[in-house]
Image (cartoon, rainbow, N blue to C red; front, side, top):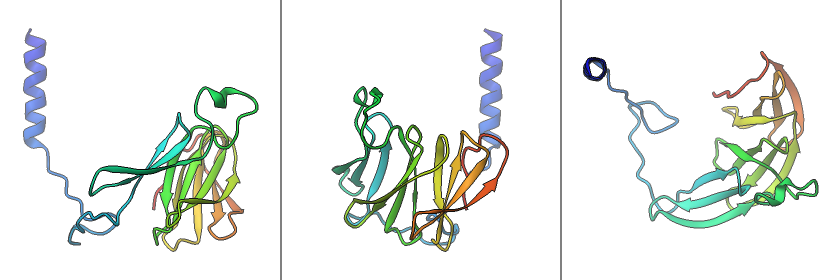
Length: 176
């Protein structure tokens, strides 16, 4: 009983002393005014077990469609699976026109045109890629290759790997 009271008191003290976090309209500064959500905006959600990317309208909270990148489970357990497996991490190009989608199980990055939601290209990288981020100028996509010891740099126009940035084994995420 005393332990529970002590934990509760400690938690209350920590909350009372906490400094509030402030964030601006991503990816800008805290002084940048917020941009209201509209039906022109889209929310993309990677879904690992169905191997799809859902597209939703955040203003109406309605599902607009699904981009199928591979077979859902359990069909993708077959050695004859089609498409991508374990659709996971995503990153937007700075202009918002391309979405890079990482599939952990098939070791790939799929580039999607956000105007048409069509697949532009799929590039295969090393074992168990995890996250993809475009560099600030949008010319490259950096992909952490978690099952290896590098970050793969992909050309955003040709989709080819142009460099490997050596890091300690098992990188998880990188961000700019």
